Length: 307
Image (tube, rainbow, N blue to C red; front, top):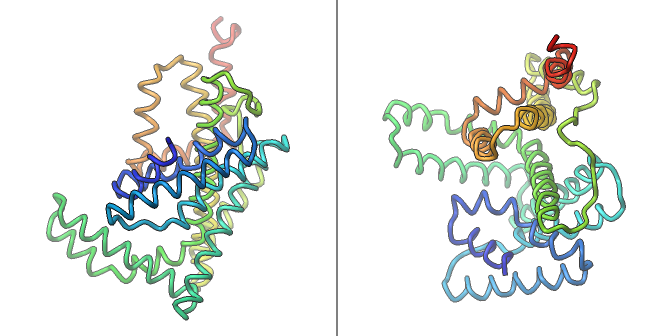
């Protein structure tokens, strides 16, 4: 039932649905992990057929294969969880599945349209940019700003088409990460067994990750378009890694200070809608390599520090 409602929400409420779709694997995980893959597959199939029937009657468009791919990630995540691997391997393995499924959709779509895959991506990005420009025109944005956006539509399209691989990987990793954390919290509330990954507020990226950050930043200054595109893709992926580390530091701080849940949710929501906050979180994760914020927080609250 919850999965069917999620599908309908995604199809009928486009703006909010695009956020809800990220949690589509969660209901599948809830049924599959304790009851087995057969139960999960039956729930997924039943929900898809029910949603498809309702949307057909209401004449609402929806791309069912995409929803199936994202929801099926819940079953893949369950299979990986049952192998008792580390948190990093769980996220990486499931994310790669989701990402390569997306690559498969792109290749199939390009084959059907008889065009190169990157041309299909450019066409898709151009359509998204156009939709966003139409949305911005309805908001309280000055005519000068709109003119600047329209004049640079081509550059904006080329930029997002160029970093599409990194955006695809980042979207896959974020989807798996958020469902894994939400699943862990939900299963604990229902007092159901779930793999224990330890204290995730202490998680940090390997120290050698900073070299990829430096290399990616350096490639942005190479006067070759291909190098700049590779650098941007690499930089986005590395920054995503440091964002997770920054969020772990933030969660550690909230727990240490016993911050109310309402304020925590407000802060995390602010990160989603305010890009400047996201940059701060990424910087927090990056500079943790040298400053070690969590160790300093522990030292400040230690008995010796109080003396």
